[in-house]
Length: 212
Image 1 (cartoon, rainbow, N blue to C red):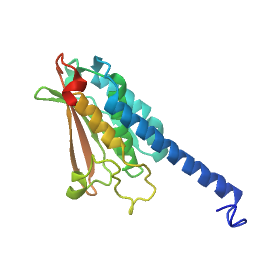
Image 2 (image 1 turned 30 degrees about the vertical axis):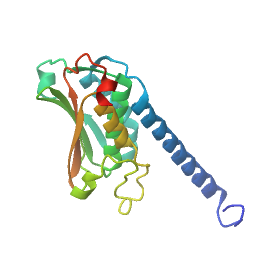
Image 3 (image 1 turned 90 degrees about the horizontal axis):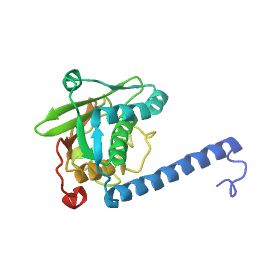
Image 4 (image 1 turned 180 degrees about the horizontal axis):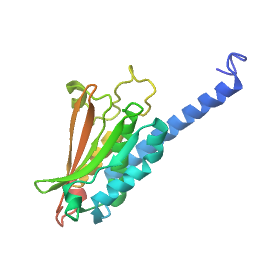
């Protein structure tokens, strides 16, 4: 466009557009690589303390939250008050990326000045990691398509939100390979809560084979 229509775009605008498109291309490539890795790589089984992992994920998202002018907070609950060992066995790197993706999504779909809260609870043999926002929320039809690849919402009402729609597909892939599942509650204009259920005792079997 710059070559065919000289003088129609300033050099500053040109550099801005090139930078934006380059960042989009990089994000797309990283998303594909992360998803392919989550689907195929062998899981490294280690003891993982989910409360510590969640706090690290919150810290890693601090810059994004500050840029958006909102707060991300880890909220200790009854488990932490009782000094419970909130541990599972799994691939620490993949689980960390899973939580970062969910927190990043919550930031992305929340207005400035709002709050994203994270916490851990227990439910019938599962640790449950909650990421709750007070953002734009989703309707029932959108929830049915939530974990399908390339799904993006609020493009019309919130055009500034970027992404290619693979982050939640990655999350579901990682959680399922750890013998867990994800539940979501949401309402338009009231925000969303993603709850990642991971087994307290995943057993001694091969997690990759169990998920296949």
